[in-house]
Each structure stands twice: as structure tokens, then as C-alpha cells.
Amino acid sequence: MIAIVTTSLLAAAVIEISGLPALVVLLVPVVVLLVVILRLYRASPPAAPATTRETLHAVPAAAAARSGPAAPAVPEPQPVDWALRIRSAEASNDQAALASLYLSVAHAEIAEGRSDAAAEHLRASVRAAVKSGNNASQAEARLELAELARAAGDLTTACEHWQLARALFYDLKDERLGKTETLMQKHGCPTDWVLNDF
Figure 1: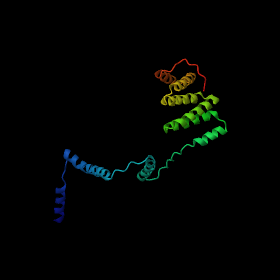
Figure 2: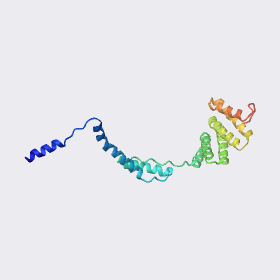
Figure 3: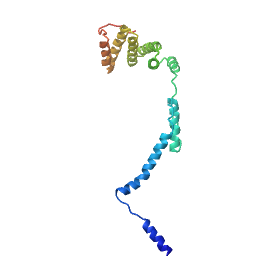
Figure 4: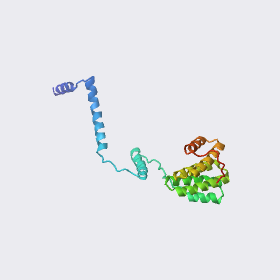
């Protein structure tokens, strides 16, 4: 008798749901789970902005915590020792390398706002480029020298450097020829000067 009552209670407890109500019943637990997850992320206080170095160190640690096995560490970029590289190129009298090195140092100094030091390194780059026949480095250095002169209000010197760079770009069949000619026209530079390389 007890078995019959239990079986009839179990049979009465089974209710079949279909259609939209069944879909709602199935989706409710998923929606609740998503809401809980979103609240957990929003509940954590916003972190203070991290510096680039802190971010670089935090990302691998967070990734390792989520992924399990440790990922290989990304080496931190080392600063370039330009002075050492320049001394090495000077010791081997590698003028082509010196032209590129001085140009790279000048770009770094321009980015840091040190125009006078950049101009010195650009002139050193031009001298080394002339000795080695590195016309591409010479032309790029002259473009930078022209821009520094223009920024200082010396359009005569800027025009001279643009004209020399234009001649080099012409010989190299470099696409920057047109840009250089446009700069010369924009600033009213004469196009028929006879210049000596300096």
C-alpha cells in the first residue's frame, strides 16, 4: 500500500512543460549565472592606471593564473647603448654603420626634444654617409636637418638641406623626392641653386 502511494505521488509530481514556458525555465539558470558573474566583475574596485612596466609584468602573471602552466616570460627590452655601438663602428672605421648609428641617435634626441644634440649627430651622420657613399642615410639626415632649421626659423639653411636631399632622392629614385619638392615649393625655396655639399 505504501509502495502504491509513493508511486502515485511520483507520477503526480512529473509535469510536462513545452513551448515558450519550457524555454524560459531552461534559460533562467543561465541568465542568473551571467548576472552573478557580471556583478563579481563590477564589484571589484577599479584599479589605478598602471604604468607600462607594471602592465607588462601583470599581464604574464594574470595569464599564467588563468591558463595553468606558466607561459614563457617575455624579455624586457634593453635600452640601446648608442655610445658603445658608435665607438665600435669608429674602431672598425665602418662609416656606413656610423651614418646609420648617428641618424638613429638623432631620431631619439629629436623625440626627446634635444634639437641641438640631434643636429650635431645629424651632421656627423652626413659626414659619415658622404665618406661611405650611403646616399640614403645622407638624404634622410638632410631632411631632418632641414626640419630642425625650419623649426628654428632658418629657412635659408632648410632650403639648402632640402635641395641636397632632393638631389639625393632623385639619384636614388626614392619616392620621397616628391615630398621634398613639395616642402621646397611650400616654403618658397629657389630650385636652381648651385650648392656645394657641406
